[in-house]
Image (cartoon, rainbow, N blue to C red):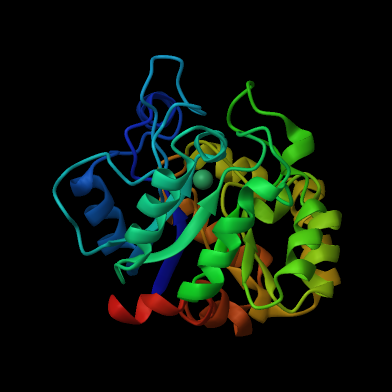
Length: 288
Ligand SMILES: [Zn+2]
């Protein structure tokens, strides 16, 4: 089965490197990405652009827009790109320049979507700071990917990443497709409500487990953990709404693919692992 991994990272972020080195045991490099993709028939990974400029680590309020997949200069065909938004910079003196830089990046068909780091940056997704971003998404017909639920930084604030807040922008911007990351975990029932109600809201299934193969296997065997996720999926009852993603390098691709195969019925595997991503990220046609 062909796979598109709709949520990976390929940025020079220290916490990702640390996790790859000592928690998930991933070779976080172009070579590592190519090898894991090849082993698992992953045709493409969609990198969620993010950068850190200063030693304080991610989230970095000083990062210029747009944030990119800047781990290595060498290009790889296995990587498609979402540009990341730093909303703090959209409030500053350079607001117009920052927005121009974002818009210019979107003219390139290699950019398949926009990533908003709700929770990591202290604004609700319906804050007016993001209005120009949603208008750009509508103009260029690309989806907006929104971090949902628990965060990978203690400096983040969960009230801003609660998936219920996506409902507000989904209603305001009916022509824009939104993807809630991580099914809003642990607020999965809230994310399920937003995905079920809005025809323009989807969810990726990335980042539900972080760790090595043992950790994934332990989780697969925890009935309550599996049911906690399945409950939301069953509530939505529409497998055109879910996209496979891993959050690589926070977990290896192979065990994570097996985990998602456990929670999605077999007859929907091709949609969740491949077709849905091609439909929602329209510019993937330039890659595949
Ligand atoms: Zn991620």
